[in-house]
Image (cartoon, rainbow, N blue to C red; front, side, top):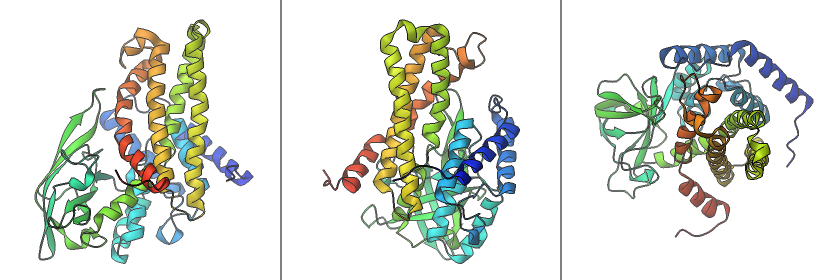
Length: 383
């Protein structure tokens, strides 16, 4: 495996950095709410205008046909700079539709993603179907040219902003649980869809619960074959787990923690803390190489199933270790929230510490990812 970048790729990295420095204020997300969302949408449209939003998509679907490593550089720089997240339409929904959608679905759903005009959310988890996602109970019943869907989804990120949702529902309750699930493209404006906010312990609103009551979804919004949705969802989750953004976003926090430790003298006075900071810096590079490995495999047409889980598992657990060490560096003042005049680093670390708790749950828990690594990577039997 060779992870060195070509001169052309490094030139592209410099171009992306210059664009971000010009277009993204360092504190763009401080306002939150409607203002931050409006900025995110403007930013996404600017990416679309440059062709970067769907950089690695095939040209036939409106992308630029760039290589996977070029896409990696782009993702790495956006995360390193703390730029707005372009959303799941680009990295999950679009690729899933390319693989499993009909030609009509591709013509209908892909161009708005390319233009940055639509926001998607992911309706997978349910109150009793999280890690064991195949136990989901949301029900879809065929009725003429529609499916009537009833059920509840939870932890649906940005459902309150989304135009469309990728949704899993059970279409055959008599089949084994992995085989009776179908995958739908749900218009969030349909009658019977209700979104309610869920606030996390950091006080921010990204998650939601979604209620579906007699929602009629046209049959042409079924993605792939009926009762084969589980296997499409597995591909979608592989796309989600394979990104470098989680790890690199933490790199900004590490640099702030290192700067605070130098300024306060905490690392000089505490050799154990100094060693933990050094370990985190080394682990950052390990995690970066794991993410590069996933991209390298994709670039060669390989399927990084277990490798994507390794990268996701390592990156999210590293961020939790980082958040704990960062709080130790700042001491009691690190617990002050954004808005407090005495909060070091603007209170960002306290928010990061609280939100890091969920990182090993989202996109598949650590336990699930360890199972994937054991079974698909090491060939171990199921327990």
